[in-house]
Amino acid sequence: MSYNWDLLLRLLHEVRQSANDSFKPRRYAEDYAAELESAGRPLPNLDSLRAEAADYERLLFEGGFIASRPEEAGGNGENFVLTERGSRLLAILEGQEPGSDTLRQRLSEQGEGALVPELFDRLAAGGQ
Image (cartoon, rainbow, N blue to C red; front, side, top):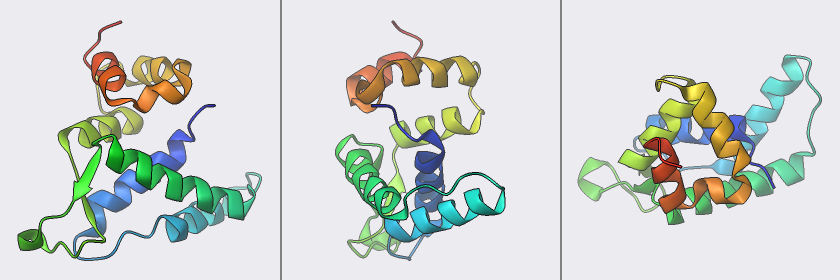
């Protein structure tokens, strides 16, 4: 299995911008599909894409890439903030990290293991 890095990037952007809004991965998947279609790219199976986005929300949360937004920062139990690990993943996917293309390729080569926290941290730090 390989990750849909563009969909993950979209979800991380939404976390960063969500503030007081509830996180809605299925809606973000629909928006992503609409963007693909308007760019002339093939439209993926929308039900599968929605399910994938919901799975990614769980994976990002359980892997420590996102965390519940604290109440004092507008948290309502349904919105998130990026953690340091999540910010690093976002920077890699946006191409802002030195060597981002290489890092993204190395993450892709790991398949499902790419977002295992310990492996991600080691790869993002430049380890083998």
